[in-house]
Amino acid sequence: MATTIKHHAYLFDATRCIDCRACMVACSVENNIEMDKTRIWVAGIGVKGEYPNLERATMVYHCMHCEHPDCMSACPVGAYSKAEDGPVIYDPNLCIGCRYCMNACPFGVPHFDYDKGVIDGAFIDKCDFCPQRTANGQPPACVATCPTDALEYGDRTDLLARAHARIAAHPDRYIDHVYGEFENGGTSYLILSHVPFRELGLPDLPETPVNEVSEKVMEMTIPFALSWGAVLTGITAGVALYNKYKEENASKTRRPSNET
Figure 1 (cartoon, helix red, strand yellow):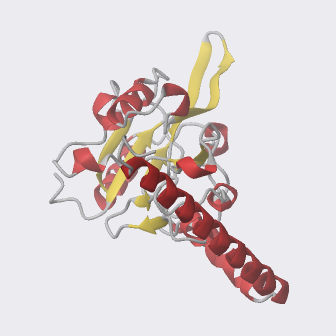
Figure 2: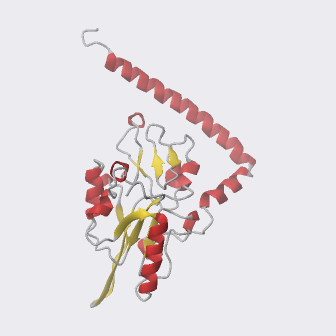
């Protein structure tokens, strides 16, 4: 599977989700993450309507793996990168905990670990497409464990074709739109729904990437240029102090036990 996928992507079908949260457990187990810090959470309004006319509106939420990542654009130290085959990758070794990515992401995805100090590193956590599985031809853990096929994994082009075919076959069941095909310049997490997407907790976004608009506006302002220089100076000093602390700790660790 891994050799045939040119652009990794997910497809989520809200009509199939039963809110069992098996995906959350699978993600935490696969990536050795505590359940209260899971990379997946459930959004939406839950059960709506009046008995006996009830319907569920929930969504499995995690990193959208945007084509034009706002987190990457906002990060001052390059802790985020965009792989050519889809995933947005986070490097905890570069992260300085500034949390700019949290403010920049229109989906509110990056989560800061407040239980860790600045020196501990690994401040932010998010979905990484389970590369340890996809590299071996296996789907991500959340997809593999979903009992109703609400989550699917494959090539973005194939998943988009599947999504549109599903809408055409059941126009009475789905909203005639695949969320993520164009929003914010496109994402690698595609969503089908039977209720308005905002009821799943998804924002109304233009097709133009948010970061392109914000960067153009900011670049035209002198105050931004001046303040950005001050920010970078502060970051440089902070990184230097952080590295010095790590070196001192490493030196203490390497010191022989009989040394006084």
